[in-house]
Image (spheres, rainbow, N blue to C red):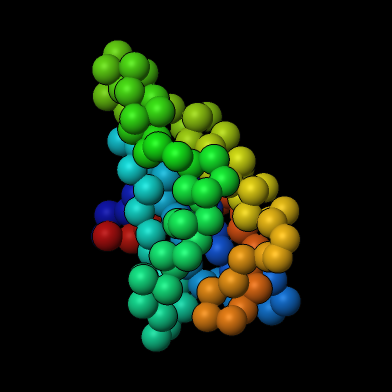
Length: 116
């Protein structure tokens, strides 16, 4: 079975640590939202996207790094790590803290592997 590696922003419940979802930072500069918690629809993460847009993510990464993407086909992992870490910090410092379905969440930059 094939797998892919990536960099993302893991969203979990602050008090229980239960994983809720993840935002994948793709090398093309697109953010992809994934749900982990069973029974949760991806649209439940929409408020997190809005919070990010209000707090620094005014343009997609593929626009922010358009000049770099013209020179090379993908964003390097150090840029993706930097962006994911920045947004983890943004989410973790918000007052009041962000919530998904009434649960306070925390964020962490992660390296992951997904089975295809």
